[in-house]
Length: 270
Image (tube, rainbow, N blue to C red; front, side):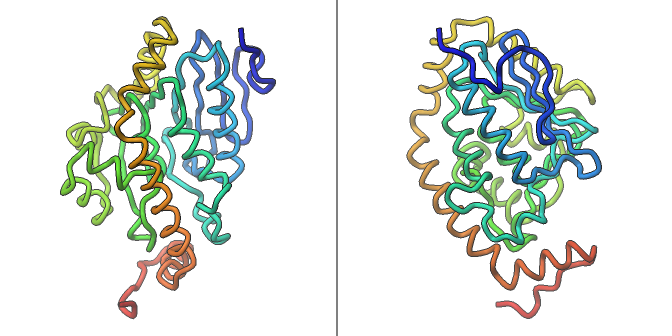
């Protein structure tokens, strides 16, 4: 029997760096909990999430992982203040480490989405095995509006899941869309009563946790076997372009406009 990693020793609830970890009945729940910031994810939160996923991979007690948000939202995405560093998707960065942990996760990943799911709040769903959304959930991929490009392998996964033109609609227009469209586009399994997405995700996770663990891991591996090479290539390419874009004059204008709560003006760029 493999020993539980130190940070996962003992079942129960543990809040760390705005991430609440709750390990019960074989299900590790990771909850975004950053009040006042709509659960925006900063570097410290990415480190906590990455460590939890990496440790869960080798902890025999963890059979499935659930992502949820507290305070009425899933997550409003990457903390935009971190973009100023220009190292958001640099090699070894907390964000890239989290993305790599998602791709490598051998156990089922399930998400329960309520409220806002923006940016990484959408792209991480594409890495999940099951996703449930409350009827009032709102999704958005605002990367282009921020003069950036999508990440987490979403430019590879989203066209495969939703189709190229539907993927273009979400990425190039960057508009807010609802839970039913997310379901129709293929990356939400079921739309549930508002406030019930987390419970539904946990119910599914508990069902998986009761099944033969080795068979579950092999089945997940087989389901994803055809996409790993293309996915990793996409993540590498996305990350390289993202790093260039963060340092671009267009991005400077986008971030300035965001901070000043005004509409960005890209008319001088070509």
